[in-house]
Length: 502
Image 1 (cartoon, one colour):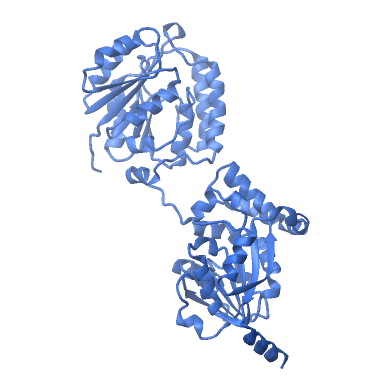
Image 2 (image 1 turned 30 degrees about the horizontal axis):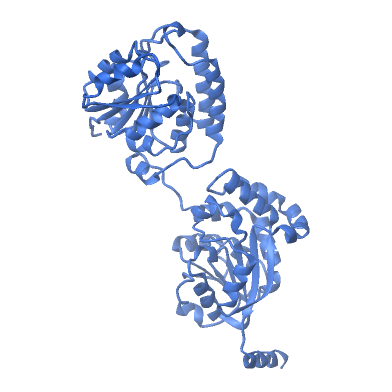
């Protein structure tokens, strides 16, 4: 494996450290690396600021002076954003941690193996013997953090943490004090960074010598571990920049396909949708945007359906659909983007029913898609459209799914009527789903639909569909279902009526 000696930005948060600040700077400067030293003074009152003036002409040193005391976490955030070298190292301003350990800390990154390195006081290494209760507290906090993050660290609370610069600069940090340690650990774990841990020396100081962390910070750390581990709020500024430097960047699956797969097991819910549109399903059916076939399987269960064409713009989704349902001789598949004119394979014979479920919201020019679908319908055929409802609950899940909009009843009716369709039925659907969408996306700020949530919801469908008609009218639902027929000229309507009565 190739090796590269990375340059380093050493971030030193300082608060009332006049006794040690000169010595720690001297030791850091003595390390054999291309470096910059960023000292963030957290409004010291003991003379530390006066000492920092001595470094104002040193080209290796940047000094940031905070006007108000903001805590270690705040000081670190400022230092991280000022960094310009390859790698960022956290260095306390006291003398508990020895910069001679930098080479050991940097080796996994030099070798291209790590994105983040923790220095452990509890692996084999020289350390000063001090407070047993403090050490026990650190181990307990590390254990709890590991349970939530599924990392097997030995020292989550260590000062020595080393990050590739692009990673730490693109993580939004919230903790002001010592909550930085559990927060950054949880967020690094969520990013799936390659994390290494190496032994370091530790020369702990006593409270008489100026140690600042207390039992209150330990109690707060418990809360921070739970808070940041369970939170699903977005915290990444530029994901592409992070992925570019990671040793093993995670492969982000297609959010749309993942969502379709999450609903693959929601058979009761898919059946509920088809129950609501059953009256509109004829003998020859086309589905627009079939995905992996969640609705197709329900439609093919109806004996009156003698042929069905599944379409999607994704060949891989249709391949999955064919693997699942391809044994049914009534089914054929066709790649088609509804924004484009229908291919000749679809125009040879008109359809009794076209189903378009959760597709229009993905299409910027949705009226064009409606017009193309109208071309494929028989004069008395039915277009069934299901779309997400209620723009007030549009959130990050919609964004990551590629939704341009959520619809009101008026907007859905308008886009259908303006493109040659006459709405004959307009139904609100699934109130509880709307509440869940609001809770997950607007309150919890999640950006994905979890498989376990869809499974739980699916188990409740028999109960939910019994109460939905009672609640849906005053409150609306997560979706709107419209059934529409092609608009006819007066002469065409008379001719159609005569043929049907003939």
